[in-house]
Image (cartoon, rainbow, N blue to C red):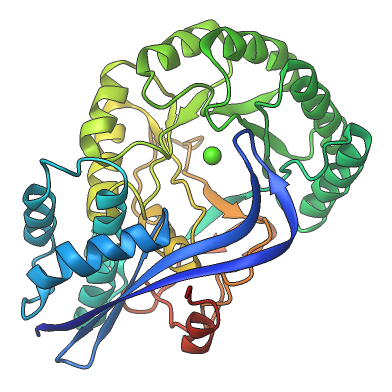
Amino acid sequence: MKIVSIRTHPLAAPIDQPFAFSQAWVDTRVGLVVEIETDAGLTGWGDGYGPPKPIASVIDTLYAPRLIGRSPLAGDAIWEELYNGFRDHGQRGIPIQALSAIDIALWDLRGKFFGAPVHQLMGGPIRTEVKAYATGLYRRSNDRDDNHAMLHDEAEAYLDAGFGAMKTKVGFGFDDDIALVEMLRATIGDRSELFVDANHGCDVVQAKKLARAMEPLNIGWFEEPVEPEDIDGYAEVRAATDIPIAGGECSFTRHDFRRIMDARAMDIIQPDTASCGGLTEAKRISDMAWTHGVRHNPHVWGTGIGLAAAMQLLAVIPTTAPSFGAHHPLLEYDSTPHPFRQGLLVDPIRVEEGIAHVPQGPGLGIDIRRDVLEKWRMD
Ligand code: CA
């Protein structure tokens, strides 16, 4: 089996109701899908999480020319060749997001070639069902009363849908953040876990103050309190609070995560499978986290292909401390508006009563709707 073509699909779609996290208002959802075709009639699909056109450019101009005519089966060797080939200019960011997309598509191909789901080729499954948490509860209005009313209803809707865990956004200023988190805890009571995410919108002083003030509100984790480069700052915040500290969606490859773990900076790492280096690198990071006794809940905010990749990985993330009360990894289930996230999939990955099932078909276990790909293709 040889690779005969690699096509990139940069996608974008406007949304009706913009929403905000600590850094920006979101009015468009984007995605980068890569499609690798072989002479065996098999096609592999990958997702790169990041700016679609620059990722596509790296794939089209740097990676694809090296891969045409090659066997897609030697995944580790291809990963190392692409990483090392551009290491001097691309240890983080867009080149690694492009590598992630290629790597996921190669795993999809290998699974299809061997007739097995990716998680089986990775030695699993450890689990076939994963508890999901709803990622949502973003700011929807700058008017506090309006915002609270909308987010109150959104939290109720997650409870009604059976979610036992959900995540909201902080990093809008101390008073705003505390008022929101108090309102949400009052809304959901003890019926759901609650996580908060600052998207690196605090400095260390702000993060410590906010963490201490949130402690009585039973917060499951405080995500991206400070900037991803400030690993010492993470460790300081972690030492100052009982709330578990999470992060890692803006970190890349096992090299970044080694530094994070050496510094005991996070209780929970959240590499994005479609950004940190693909399934190959995410599994290595997962094994490293296991060795350090650190939890791993993958970040998921891309297309349904990235979601499927995360599900395959979740099937093989080791439990931290096996026991009757063992902690299992959680699925981040993006519940924000997105016109094509799951629309790309012939069979969307569903969460029912807060549980998602790992796709069991060959490769990623998904089929792609080409009409949806064409509809949202960027100019
Ligand atoms: Ca996040």
